[in-house]
Image (cartoon, rainbow, N blue to C red; front, side):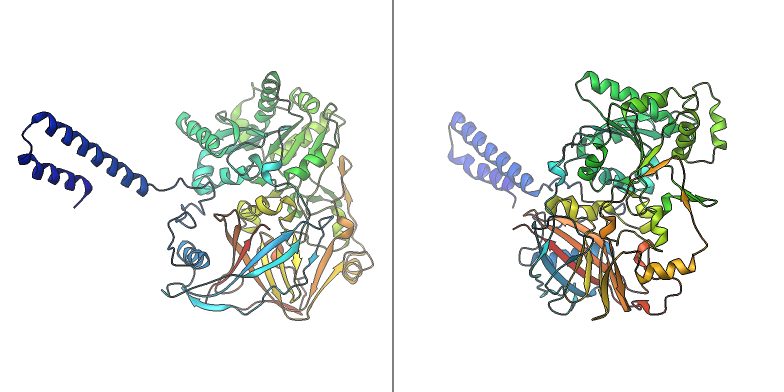
Length: 562
């Protein structure tokens, strides 16, 4: 019997005993108030907590985990494994291992490779069945790793930055389902806690109705992004829409200036550019005088460069930044945004927007394009080096990360809320020859088969590559000024033989105590290789990737504070 039914029954039973109408009315009113109160409390208890901005994956809302609804009789590790199996379709039988990790902020500089005196695998994997009712999983005691003290997202002031992005509503809702692009933007446009980090955004939507523009604008506000969302002009291709953004950014900069908000750097970026190190980006940009003309490009990896003849060049890699005086100059160029131009002619363009900008600026000004690289510079070709996410570099940008690497950077970047932005993609080499690339992969090598070598021109790798390419020389385009990658001279490469087994990041969450949970998975079947994960040379006969398996394998890392 429900609370309300019980109250009504009590009134019925009590009615014959009461002869005075006033008393009967008072009793009825009191019991009715209790009924309403109990019903309200019951409804409140059944309410589902508001989903976190991280509750998404590949277009599907994530199930409940670590939100107060899990089975309290089970360990959090057990709950998490069962969630992973259900959410990602893993095999019910799973080799499983979990390790707690505690960062020690005792390193002066971010190293290319950080050695850890402890073993990674303190015991062998447990082969468990996720649906076992008696399953009781627990992570191993914490290992300590050295990191530098760096900013977490909530410690950054990015108020000097103004970004411009053009995309489409369909790309937000369909190609990148469940607005995952917006979730990715929150990692570098907010403090990670639902508030803006000071950076502003002008977003134009192609083929969007007014209601769709309003929906995206509200979504931005919900996650803490300071954004102006506008419909893109009809009939404009992607290059035309980015040329339109030049004037929009200049206008928005002036409007914000009237409110006392000065923007020193105005950036046009592809919708799938990710900035994992806003603090480092600000440090590099602040070396430019914002009162002088500045034209800056930030290519991510080798694919953002092209070779024409024997000349290597880039147009910015989908991330181009202007100082205000340079932006004002660009808006006046005849090749930028001619409103009288027939929009149907834009369909004939084949160049990307950053290339069009480069050709326009190079043809009408004397300004050079200053390059702030992330993973690659042309001199890397001397080494035959394939630098990428596993190279130990702290990048300024990631570009086309899903297309090139099937990587979800917001999940990998989540750990920076605990250990700072320097620890993202930091490499840790454990005593038993396991290497963690934080937020990306965990790799196991055959025992005693790994060595880590400094990258020097006298190395065997360089001499062998130089001999194969002794007649091949390239030069950098004359209108480019290429900065060095920070720590380039200290970079180290992994030399290994035998078999390499790799677990890739699948999921990441923040636990109730602020700890960050990461799940790395090696899928059943043949090992897949994406981009820089397969670091063998084509003629390599001494290295092999792991063979096929009939089950999925899971490694969980739990990053916790001291």
